[in-house]
Length: 92
Picture 1 (spheres, one colour):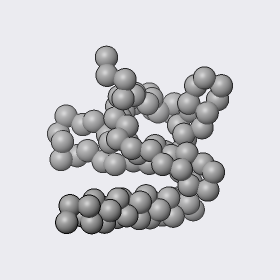
Picture 2 (cartoon, one colour):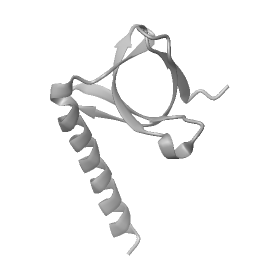
Picture 3 (cartoon, one colour):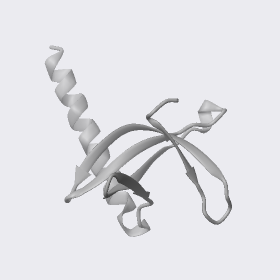
Picture 4 (cartoon, helix red, strand yellow):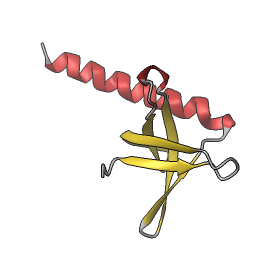
């Protein structure tokens, strides 16, 4: 079994969603995971950012509040832009 794939279950509907962790980052003393939804149709896959909260040996995943969602996604986009710029600069 692939360790970077997790299954989340919606407690209200029982619907299962499979996610693959593709990155993680810290922002303001909080940890976040970047996940790709695993869909049968790859065109329907989405990138999702969830807060990762350590609870003893376990890690709990929590959805972002709407009020903070834009700031977290924008912060991650800026990290990706910086990494791309560094990579482009090192290729010259």
